[in-house]
Length: 100
Image (cartoon, rainbow, N blue to C red):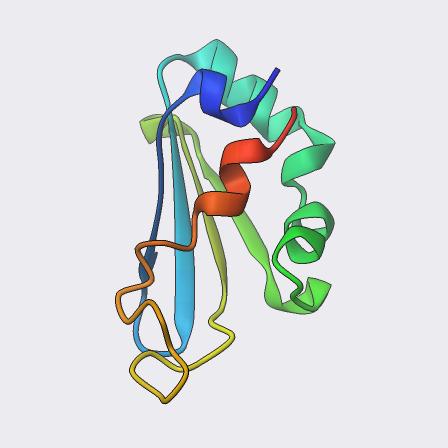
């Protein structure tokens, strides 16, 4: 099963110029619990997917909202030369192919 099949929202955005967040929002508790238990959404797996050091990736489940927030540094500071996504809104793409 893919993450995209059970999440109603998969999005990314900046949390300041140097931090990127990914928000995963689920339709129901069963999907949320499946995602939380998946080895594909551990800090190690996300770090590998986004070419980040493991120590820089946080995966934060928030059960009251059936949501998971993932926090990591941006590769390029927002607005610096070479930045192709100033708002960080296009960085969720790799999550769309995640298999749980």
